[in-house]
Length: 142
Image (tube, rainbow, N blue to C red; front, side, top):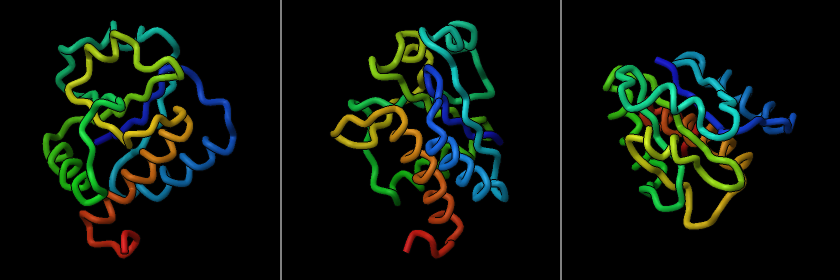
């Protein structure tokens, strides 16, 4: 199984990339965490479409479902049981493209506040790791 953090655009900030790499390392025993830079305009989703049977697209949007860390862990465990790759899609400053919105099977929100895509990537990487530690009983979450 692969979990992707996908951003519509490019990540040029070395600190953000280093942060993501740290969580990629931490998650290696459980699954592969990838960072995908999709470019602008949703061209990736125009190709993928909704017919994709091996990947679940979760769009990060302020109007999406909100979870506690424990609730997200339970949700994530359920999604992982479907034996499909999971892609969390984060829009750029202007938000998600229409093709990304159409491809999404669900919408999640990190907060009622708006975050930059860089911060959203870092929060998602940490929360995915936190979810795994909750699921496996690792003391990180305590």
